[in-house]
Length: 308
Image (tube, rainbow, N blue to C red):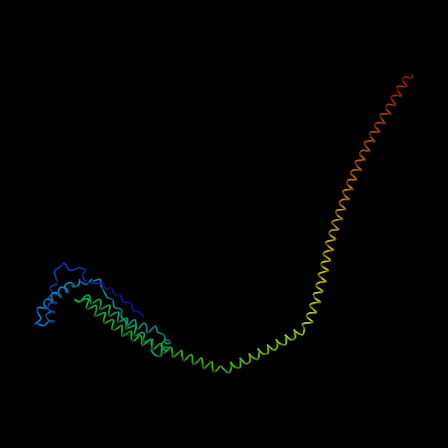
């Protein structure tokens, strides 16, 4: 569970270049007084030189004015812890017999508080004169607390792994005990299964012996069936052959009938042609006879007229 911290911190308050304005008099005097307290009067000459360099470095690190927009908003950790405690269910509290959940929550809270204190200290360092020294001290304090939290976290993880291993061993022991307790029932079941398998094997052997004894009869039955099938197939083949022959005979009869019909039609046409020709000849003969009779009558009339 993490607590959101609205932190807006500047990356640096130091000027990227040397200041062009006059050096802060207060900072120079403060550095000089510090140097005078640090060094023995017998080493005054060396102290003056060292303080001169120190003052120059201090003036180079003169901080800029604090930006009013920079702010650190603190979110109370107690409220967050109370919310997490209320969200935990009674079942989880009963299950966590060794307090692993509470200890883990305490470590998480300490880690969040450590990060929060470091953020606040980092922000406050930019208001101090020695910014880098303050930041290094804040990082060192945060690192020490983080290492302590890390040690406790590793110890807690080891305890949890140990408990899980013990629980796993207990479950394995329970399963082994249950397996041993079920051994008589399992032996009875296996014995019944073996007897059932043996009975099935005996039944299969009897069935195989019966099939072997019935093999000659099955062979005879198969031979009789094959003969019946052969006879039936022969009858089918003969019927098919007779059908084909009958079809050929019908085709031949049809062809002969058609030939007779053609011959009859041709004979009828010839008869009709001869009858027409005979009728024409008879008509011609009748006309010739009529002409002859008319000529004879005419000759008779002429002779009668001449005789008168």
